[in-house]
Image (cartoon, rainbow over all chains, first blue to last red; front, side):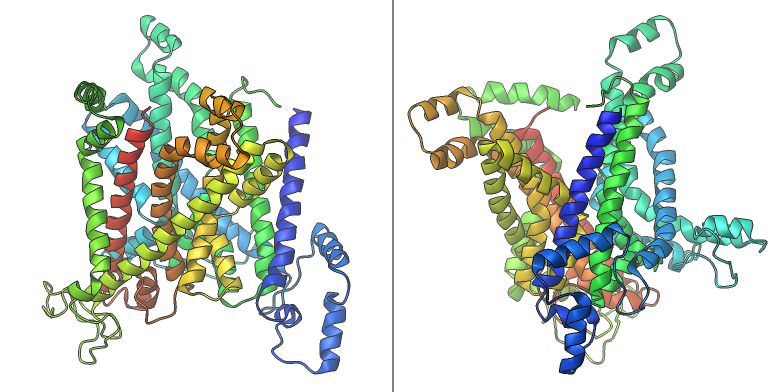
Length: 335
Length: 299
């Protein structure tokens, strides 16, 4: 266990090291003068320019510049935004809860619908239920999230007028930011109806983002259950006269969980891509809109720092998923 | 599945006298959905190539008297503009037709480029092994940890968006998958008898890598290219949608969406027309991919 953790932490360090090199050179391969790019100033007097060179350390050797950059990253200093002047790490922490909230609810929706549909599809293998949902998941898997997002906006927000199109809560409410999670904040605030409004705003975006894990989950659950049902212990359970429900719930699902989680864990990067697009469609103030806006505003310090932080998230979530499925299936060795 | 269990037997019987490729073709054409996908993709490609002849209007011509005209079959529709016009009075159908050219050209080039680079690096990595292989694999893993779309966007801030830079950026996001697959295949192949035989008669490293190993890796690489093509089409539209695509007024499906988002409530066709084309195209490519997967790696 300890060995495994150490090995994985080593890998994470290596990843961060690689990411820091990439981010360091990113600013230096950009067309244009890196000094002006990093300061965000269009034209400067020679004295100001010399000041900036001194401030960013561009007059020192590449190696010592990199060491300095690495040290500041390790200390949690990712520089300052050119546009808002706020620290990159501070903005990241401010935008992160919205993205976590969105992704978390997307995953909940995916599990809530994905697992039962997957199990039922496996039980009704090759029957109309199975065929129908295989067709639906195939379409769901093919349609890009921003396309399904826009189409759902037309259907539910414009034609039917059931859901709001953008934002995290109705502008009628003023919710003080306690945790950053709107659902939690609105719940603990005493505003009547705020909690419902937050959920109301959250539903459509999480449904859209949820299609990515949902379609994968249905397919993986179905194939994992189909695989498990061929095992001897299922036949034994049947011979004992257990009901099909009990067999699935108690024996099949437990053993099918490992492949489901293993394939699901690999999708963190895909989910993050989906979150970027979903947030743009619904003007959701999360990491995705933050990074896309920084890119279109050419806010280089934010792009540079944001990239490293995003990679860190992907790597850490992957580690957690790895640990989780090792916890579920004790047969997997650490090593 | 059940009918697939039966059909291979049929095809084996038929293909006794035919060569192997014939039976694969036969199997592919047995899969009706895959054939449908193929037909749609071919149709799309034809439209893209013949855009100049099939498009009713120029994609950039602005009809000043026809802003946001509804599709022909709706109230206030006009048969001159079958799918209606956008906020600048441009014919949506024509823009979609020219947009197909854009998507398919970039997607195709990006896949070719990434296959070429990824396969070369992957085969090299798997063939050489040892420390070089380990380094290449770590870098590839790092690469894969990054969301592909983000990589494309960051690359597009380095190069100004143009056809060439978008192609390169999209290809860069696809490369790691090819590296992984090509490496795994090279490692699988290099312990086989034919490889050892070639080496023992003194084939050079280059020959071993690219003339001996590579031809035996083609099937999974073709499946991966088809997968990548669908990812490329989606990514091209996504960067257009995020406003990082080619400069207007070049017609592009994703850019059409981002340009028209403000009209989503008053003129929904400006959104659903490009969306439908995108969905249809991606589904067709994925059906085709499934068909290819079935014949190349039957499980």
